Length: 372
Image 1 (cartoon, rainbow, N blue to C red):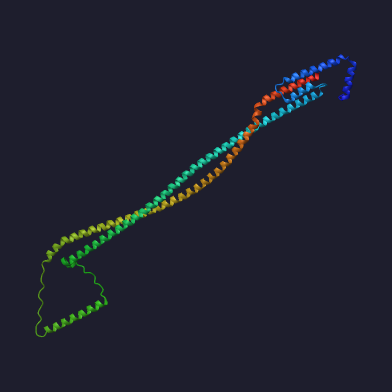
Image 2: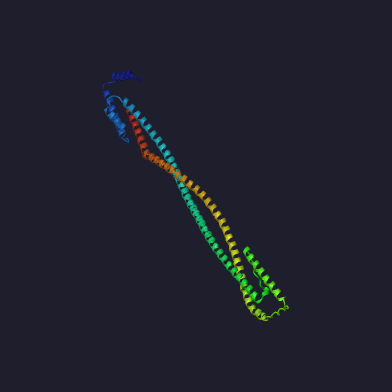
């Protein structure tokens, strides 16, 4: 029944069994159906070019509507496929845009975190460098202080030695003067200088002189024994002036003793001051050495921290470049998605409604044509 021969047979049978006027009615009915179908298609909100072609096809169609109905069915199928494609594309766009926006937020947050790390590391590095500079400056100042203290100690020591030498020399002179006064005023307290050891020539000269004196004494004794009796020596003269001399020497001796005591006091004070100054200098040197060693160790520790911070800063800068590049790529992907999807997402509802209207119009036109 679906073959063309059956259809031709059916039409011929109808033509033989009905009067000629029925052909006019059929023709009028076909024209009316085409007109109604075109009117229905014209009501579609969106003028798809395929519907326009369908309208033209209806306008030029002479016999039967099989081809037109087939085109209507194909067009309805295409419109539904296109709508499904738009629906899928919209879902894909919304999903990818949300995903890419989340990735961009993560990338921006990473960039912000890395920049915060860089800022904190730079601040810490600046503090460490300032600490190192302060420690180095302190060590340099300490070295200058040690150098100045050493120079002052040498100068003070030289002055003390010079003062001690002068005072000791003055003390020796006072003792020498006092001994000389004893020789004149109080011979019992006089201390003769130690005998100097004679040289060989001096001993020979002395020996010859002593022999001559003994010969003269011997001759003198013989001459006296020849006719004259020996006379006793005269009595020693009594010098009663020693009492007056002792009284006169008492004031001078007292003054010398006072000067000697004053010198000894000065010598003791100078020696004590020198001893205390040396102790203070040695203590200062001990403290300075300990402090310098401690500061030098601190500088070494700070240098280690500085090296670590510089390495971290370098790593953070490299990571920042990576994160910036990632954020840039993600931003570009988001821009491309918006460029591809914004128009579709914005007009999806209108396009869907227009397609639905077109499908409805096509289905109504098909119904009209099928009824004809």
